[in-house]
Length: 206
Image 1 (tube, rainbow, N blue to C red):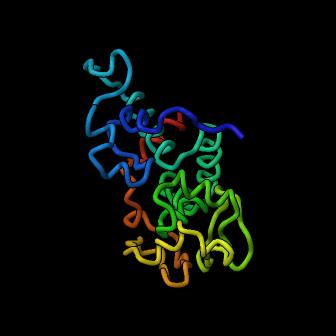
Image 2: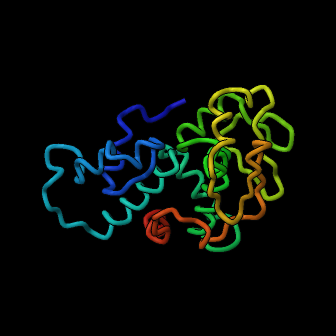
């Protein structure tokens, strides 16, 4: 399966915004954006006039990188969102938020979406009692996501029990049981992703 293998911090610098791709490092002084708050490359510090197309492209790239999707994956998700009832931009964000890897991250079981994707792929989670190792799977309201019993003894999940976890309104978490529930579809006001989704719709509508 194709995946991005270059330095994650370059993506944050290119978007001039923290995408929180490396967990705790993003909150520390080691964050690359704190040291070099300009795009990477030879001409990173040059001032450039951005066109309307450039703005739309940057929003798409930002959203794609924020959730850790490649181009084809993101385009396919957009096309599915366009076929659903309602506003395409909001549908897109809802579909991205309810991906299995993002739900695991939002529940606090991983420090980043990249780590969540790895944990899901390695089969550490159950959904409604059944193993689910597909990061892109949609987790619907009413679903219970739990850490597999055999995985709960690992140091990674033991330390979670001692942490204070803040979760969005559409999710609830029982830290002691290492499980969480999806209460409802997230609303736009529940999604804190710094993306102007209407620009993505405009880009793909051309």
